[in-house]
Length: 248
Image (cartoon, rainbow, N blue to C red; front, side, top):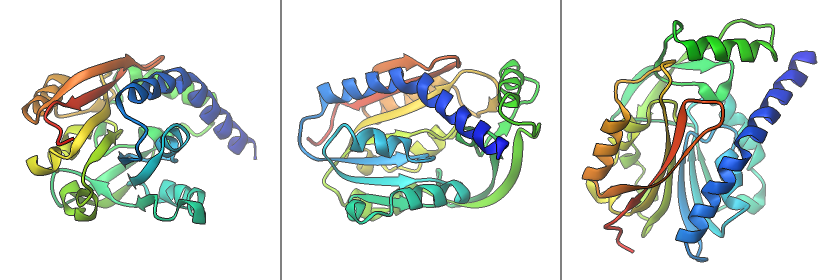
């Protein structure tokens, strides 16, 4: 019971810390997106934070949400199974990447940090995060378990790209963002207006790319940086890229 209360307190702290940033993100999109109903792809849905953010602030036509962790997926499925969301929120318990593959997924104590990438336990950020998490849990295992998951490229979801256009593609996958972008064809990139993602500059997550690689890949597909904001207490930035050759 005590551990559950601590877990809830931890989640409240994180929500409070991130609130100001999310408000700025919403204000950016309100200036850019008109009042027409919008279509969103939400990759790394976690517990539905992005779903709530956009449903509460925009006229959402459809949200296609992907969450790799099967245990977390059960939570969001229960949360959004209400009839009022039918035909609006489409939930997928699927991991996305560059191509069809199988890979072990690290389920982290702080579930929002779960990742396909390896964890550098020698990094200063890892040590700081572990100390912070120890306030809310006596369990010292940073990685709770590893699970083998099937990976698919986003291109395979033709029902999504049958939409005339995609207003926002959001990706929050703890260092796996570029892998996911590489699973989108040039034709499908053409349908997306904005890509909203984050990039970690700390050394805890062992990525095989740098921010410059991510930026260059998006530039090659006609997406250019329009907004960035640093996340509080973290060496992480959120970025919004706009498609300068959008079909709309």
